[in-house]
Amino acid sequence: MFHSGPRNLITDVAGLKVGNAADARLKSGVTALLCDDPAVAAVQVLGGAPGTRETDLLEPQNSVHEIHAVVLSGGSAFGLDAASGVQAALRERNIGVEVGGFRVPIVPAAILFDLRNGGDKGWGRYPPYRELGYQAAQAAEADFALGTAGAGMGALTSGLKGGLGSASTVLETGVTIGALAAVNPTGSVTVGRTRHFWAAPFEIGDEFGGLGYPSPMPADARRILLKYRDKQFGGQADAGGNTTIAVIATDAVLTKAAAKRLAISAHDGFARAIWPAHTPADGDLVFALATGKSGVELSADAAIDLYAAAGATMARAISRGVHAATAAEGDLFPAWSSR
Image 1 (cartoon, rainbow, N blue to C red):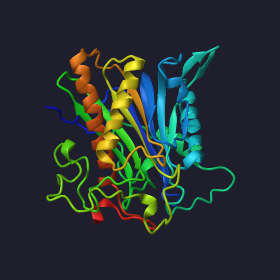
Image 2: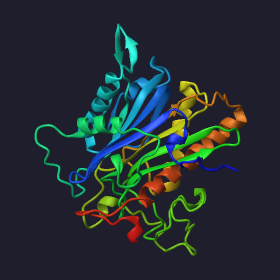
Image 3: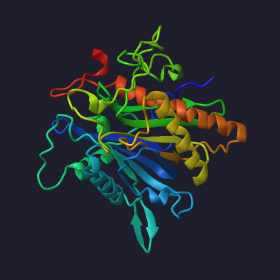
């Protein structure tokens, strides 16, 4: 049987820390995941409208195999500045790959769209995300806030606030896998308009309410509920107006190609937790990291368990992000706790 790690956070994977920084007036923020030592990394993009930095180098055929941090940010394309702030914090610590006598921190990043969520986006000439990225890196610890925090500060789903979620799973091999997700999809994480999460079969304990599936299933369970069809926004779903961005990580020893497979498998968690997922209006993306801290190289059978756990752990992280969201002044949608 699988069970969660001691924190039920991605930082149960040895060698990782996470920091958040956000601006409540802006209703946006940044989450930075820092690696104690360079980690093998990969990425898989399945949404139709991604916003990214340094993702090409993560493909298995390309030269750089390890990275130093990952950034998840609000702010749409403006939020890509956050990676520069994290990079600056790492450079101050002399962290980076050595190139021609210089150390260059490798910091891939992805963004979500939270511009029209009721926050004040009148930031002047330059957006605040570089400084928020720096603050998030400086705040990185083993424990961090979920829900309305970091990159989840201004996230929304169909009819509910989104948020920052995380979860972990310890496998029978002793290997740990963890997920981190900034949940801002066009679709719904709950069954129809109920309080029940689509990811209910994968819940451990009552980590997102312990409600299971509704019985009987509501009549609108199959209805496609989209964020931008709600009255607050009007019109149809906008390309690039959504996105769930996430990290899946393990302390197992993986090659870059195996990390790519891990990222692919973690997307199954999106499909288990969000209906619909991977639409043309979403920029759905998963970074995969392998710290190798356990020293375990998985057999073929154990690898299947790892990839299965990737989807389940991601589904739990997504649900926990919405479950933990809290109400704030000026919200366009309610928090899950009020439903």
